[in-house]
Amino acid sequence: MREFMNVTKALADANRVRMVLALRGRELCACQITELFELAPSTMSKHLSILYQAGLVDSRKNGRWVYYSLPGRKAAVPVRHALEWVCDSLAENERIADDAKRLKQLLKLDPSEICRRQCQR
Image (cartoon, rainbow, N blue to C red; front, side, top):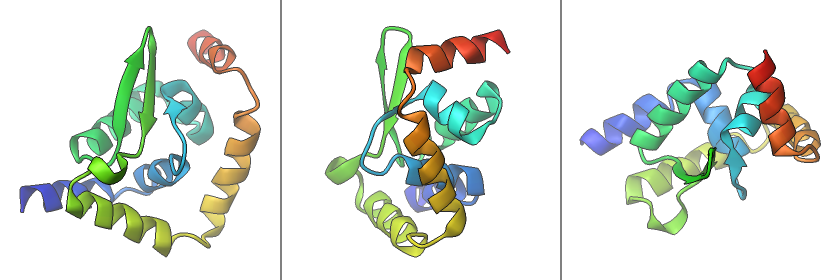
């Protein structure tokens, strides 16, 4: 029951749902996610922490970079079902489509340059 409640609470925020959808089929570093959603790094960190604790995202650290991705087949069954439901339910959503367009442009940039810019703000 606790796992189910953690998943539903994590998905109760629009920004967190958008983050999950941005991670479909790819891994993104924290700075790319922060840039995409134009939120403060501390806010983004809190959102990603909630998603991680619920099992909805995986993270890995490489030097000073932290990368996030969806958990895939190794995720618990409720997590897999929740991710499938979110992806299916919002496949045609306009805001998600806008995020995908912005992400496509963002992926053309060097992540280290994005991080440097964020540190200067």
